[in-house]
Length: 433
Image (cartoon, rainbow, N blue to C red; front, top):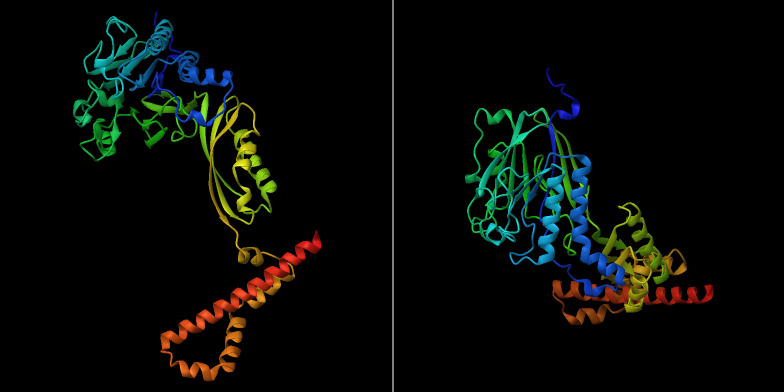
């Protein structure tokens, strides 16, 4: 009797992750004042992010996971890091999910202990170069037993890989062209052939005509082309790795990608925020603008994430000197244990008297606009020139010297006008108080 083919048996699905860097600490944490609870969360953040990826794979019943290198942060792996990976691989193996793990520059094949990561040939777990050849191909078999694709995978044997890796990947023959081909590679897309991280060009990957490239090495999620993708690290470790981090979830049917989704896995998230406070009349209003901006940003993000913020303050303000250490200290203590401010970069400019008067809609502002008008300044100069014509004649100015003299007189006149207007402005303030 012929087996009935159900919709769920058609095609296949997988997740693509990379650069887990088990064992890497978080950077620049000395700037934060953490409770013991948050400190422990940091210690376990990478493991939790990894478990989020594993649990998602099991929940979605994916056919396999692609891990695109740098699973460990160092070739000298600590016990805890090895244990985290071993537990995850066993969990996936028990769930019947295949794993294809390539080694990168941080965790080359030579750094893996064969006794710790020994898997039989028929195991679901494939560590490329350790229990397979350094370049390997694997058939993708769907639930009906039909071959639907091929995974082409290459590992770093040592910490550096100066060769162009594409020469190892097989071109598609007539049979393979009808299948879904995946390239699994840890690489830096660059024209610098001396690069030690498997240097290649985007065009060289395109030339192989694979249907999906699962890349590792770059920590920020990045789509170079519709199907040439860096999944990024699953958990950021420093302020350069801003935004959400996670995995790619891919579903394929009839050799076509029908779903290509980014799924966050991170526990802790870095963000850079630019805040312009030019509209604030004083430091109190500036404080409200900043806190409102932070709260509105977080409300649009994932619930339950710890945020580490770097704030860039911009704008032109009259209260420049009030944005000081005391202001920063108050601001950093404003939020709960879901938001921490690591750094406030002050790129403000001091609002000058001229800036203030230009925007004043009172008597002082009107006086400033009238008296600093170019036509009015020209009129002032003409009066001065008439009064001191004899003196000027005796100076024997050249044309350029005369123009410079005239410009200086007008600038002095403008400065006097500004001072008078600003005196009126201050007088108005005192009257209003």
